[in-house]
Image 1 (cartoon, rainbow, N blue to C red):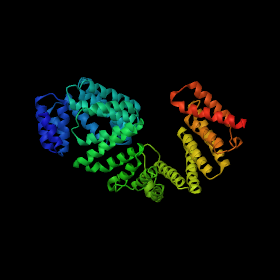
Image 2: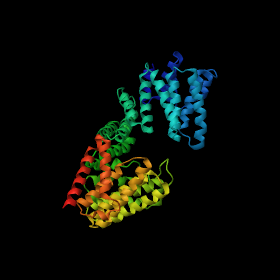
Image 3: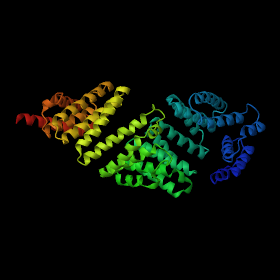
Length: 480
């Protein structure tokens, strides 16, 4: 009977599903049946569930407490700020009381896990995330008889760990969940896209592209998922670009259904930025410049800038980030077209914005961004036949990289390696005199090489060989 109830709900017949779940409730002590009855009844437009349960179950019974907690957890996601904090504290306390009464019921553990999961999503409280994972795991351990609950909890564990940043752990749960059939195509789509995001975050770009492509294929084969088509197209394009398939990414971004929200003001800036990234990677810098001009016009509109928001960032931060991206892409496109003076202007404007942001925020990421921006400007200076300017810029890049390494307590950072490498090539290939740099080039290269040799990190084998070559060529150059 319960299987037929789920089938009716999936087929869009919530009234029939509610009746079937109610039949199970009358015959069996099943909290799962109560959850199904609630969901089916709400889908059918019924709003009197509290009174229905008050008439059928005594005050203080497990069912009444569970149902009340379940309905309150469902309402939590509609709240924000102080209202959320107050309600969440009460709901979590009530859900804990239900768990104490029925610790072996997977539905009760899952309910408490969901309440804690929501607290983490709304507040960023990582302790709540840890407690949610613990409750989900307890629910998973006691849900052997219910494949549906196992599937749900595996997906929730995967989503929770992915949001925390434990992407490798999340993928374990995503893959376990994939071994169980998906009854709801929306859940299947969310699974593909979330799994692709986790894969992207651990550097498995080609697998991420495949996951997003699977999500897009599902959308195109399932009429009921039509509303999610823009999202699926966007993710497929983004992951294709990350995987190096720029032509496919550009083709996807050029599709008429690639716009995430035709009514979104912020999309007027973000869509051309996405197309510009793909066009530049596809070797079409002129097309990229056209898109970047469109993005620039959009970002100049106060309404667009106001519409670009991040939930955990101060006002204006998202728009400023998009402008930094636009200027960086513009500099790359202009360099590819040989328009080096204009590239210097665009990248110089970007560097000024980064410097101002660094003074305001004083974060480690700001030092890294400045170092990379100065290295880019140094490359443009070299292309413009301005060796002294290139040497000064790469010296600045190394100084910022040194500050970053000092803050992090790292003897040799990747940003330092990059700046020293470029300085060595400016001297050895570009014939920039060593005295043009604001540091002892040979001394810094030798110190870095000695650290690399002492560290014996296999991932740095290529860097060790390169630095050994730099020092050899410096010795030969002096000998001549």
